[in-house]
Image (cartoon, rainbow, N blue to C red; front, side, top):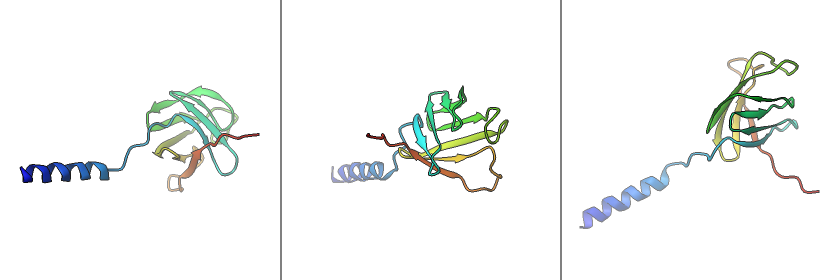
Amino acid sequence: MKTFLLVAFSGLLLALAVPAWADQIDGSWCFEDGRHMTIDGPKIRTPGGTRMTGIYDRHAFSYVVPKGEPGAGGTTEMYQVNDEVIRVKPATAASDAALQVWRRCRMQMS
């Protein structure tokens, strides 16, 4: 019986030590330079203000940048790190460029 309890307790501790997955990528995201975008399932409002659809996964998103925005025709890819952070590879970035860190937008109170 003691062995069973020890194994069960060890399993519980191991389960608690595993990092939790972020809830979902949906929401409003802001970059340090003032740009922002909003994801709602497969729908996105891009940093340039275009409303369109992209390729949605619960923890990742990509879209082909529309005409009139930087990187038009290229693909912007992003994945969620945790509930507050996504990493974004803009269509204009070189393949070895550092990913941008975007954070959940905070509600503004006036």
